[in-house]
Image (cartoon, rainbow over all chains, first blue to last red; front, top):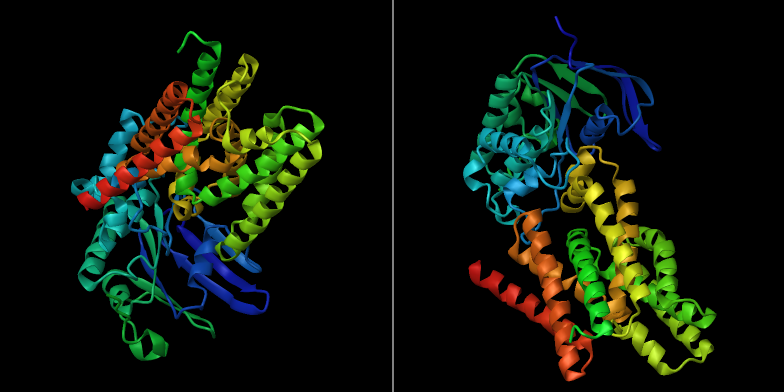
Length: 233
Length: 263
């Protein structure tokens, strides 16, 4: 059996005046889908930055699989309605295996495949600035997929979407998870989606954390602000 | 018209400068650095005036000051909250310094006009080669770092997520911008370097949807402007800068109109 994608052991971290976690331990198995949930400010994004190596833990260990290829879809993107690039050109920005300013045939094919996989092919010539929220999120996802990751972190990817689009995006993520044995860490504060689409959850609270491998969660133990699941339209 | 050496020189230099400013402008617009470009040109004005005072070529003075100051001024303007105030402060200081240097050098007012409003007609062959060389340095440097620069300029958040070396790219681009501002100012003057850096790339932003499209549009619009400007200047004896400014603005407003019509 292969080593887990990610093993976190007794991790402690905090900013100067604010300890975020101590003694945090969990494992993400290959091909698993995990929700990282918790109220705003509890350190969800910070944990993703620790996993990505952008921050160093105060103590403890973060061990990643030697063959890990990380794809990260960040929470905020500054795409205004005037943004000029088409969906295809935007996704292509992350194609950097070659150094030539122009893109070769093979790269174009790989790009087309990524657009196909995310259901964007028919809309690839649409300007990203004028695309719908769902199309934008899919484009961000497609861009991260171009580097063929086996571990994908989605930071609040569904936060600004309506229910239908959320479901569509998560179904897509689950398909990718099954097809490519992609390990997924889904950062959210949408409990409904977490329950529906991920097998386990890691709940961060100011007091500590809770890891549950079973799919059903006891909602009464969730922090107040997480229930009911937040809906933004 | 092309029988004259001075027109050959002007065309040769303008062509290379327009291509460079068109290409660099696409990234200036994407990175939101139009005002920084303007500030750099004012710093360049002070540098050129200082060069006149100490007796070295104005372009050299301009290059020196813009290249040295580009990175620190770029850093000042990173935070949007204080961008406008810091840029205004730096602009004022350097424009003031430029005026001081010109006054101290006791040269005629025509020097000030030349630096502020450009004077592509009348440059020497040696100047042309220097400009062509600088333009090539900028274009080759961009070609080498193209993909990283494009990613960081058009999707800084994504570039960060992919662990691109964003600080290095930022410094590298500010240096390119400093050189582009200095050579652009040779045609349209330091006061109006905007014309070549911002207007063609804004037209490209409205009309293009891919990087190759945007780069092509920006270069073509910049080239038409400087070529037509030179020809009209030749026949009318009016300032070339005026024609270039008018043509580029025409392109800009036409593109704006077109965009609004199609949406």
